[in-house]
Image (tube, rainbow, N blue to C red; front, side, top):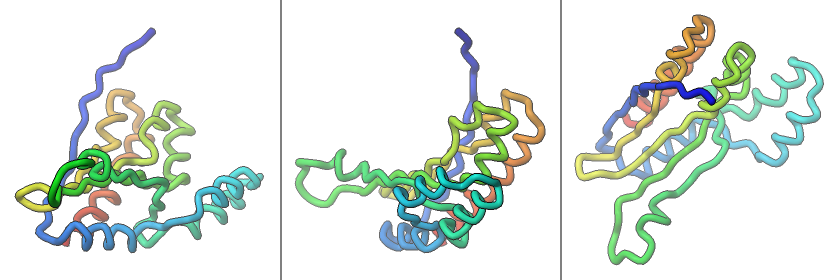
Length: 164
């Protein structure tokens, strides 16, 4: 049994835009493929070029697709009176980026797709992301770290853009 200590860096941006406007910006930037069809198509692909042809139409302008969305606010605020702050967790990513990391470091699969947390607080709407490069730093794999840093930059650009 092995244990590895991992320190995580969290990137956060605070926006004065409305929660709905931020979710709309994120929705416009990431792809939303039908996940059942997508999984079947991934399974049917036999070559890397076929895999790329399946994935590319599913990604949005940001280069990411949404895999699933959790409305935490719907659960947390159940039974409470009045308007409560909203909170949504999005799992987004790109299977081709994941592949680049996992081919060299299987443990990288634990961090793909990535989580984006969007939540309302008194000072604005927070968009938060735990940097994949910080998760993978203890493994000391230069190639994987390079891909993770590029991934982090893309996600952070997406969040900054959505925040306005």
